[in-house]
Image 1 (cartoon, helix red, strand yellow):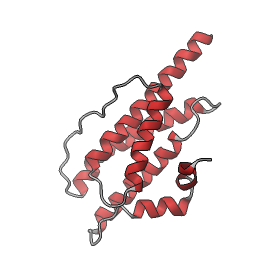
Image 2 (cartoon, one colour):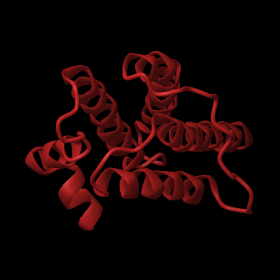
Image 3 (cartoon, one colour):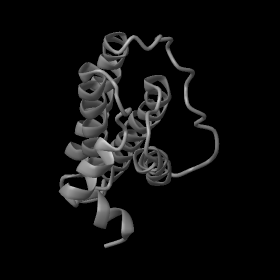
Length: 152
């Protein structure tokens, strides 16, 4: 178990990290939106830590990709709730010749870094990183399906 597993799977620690993103003196709706978004990100990061090569890897990758898609779908409305101007973020830089697992790990590390840095983060910034994580999960599913096809 590495350091990420220790803090990511410790509910009191992740709760403190989620609450650390609230703006002091912010209206209640801002705190609720922040808590919802960061709580969802904790769940996505936990799924990203699962082994996609394991017996349940396909299901975990599907849940991760779908969870990312669901959060991305809700972010514009949540942004509106807190009066944060929304503009579709540019796609994350996915260049490079990384394996599917390395791409997934990189996207998860970037989101974990945002989670562990206290203070507010614009939802557009999170959207770009969540999109990269979802993309990595889908790419991992494609690689898994291709490997299954080849072995059949």
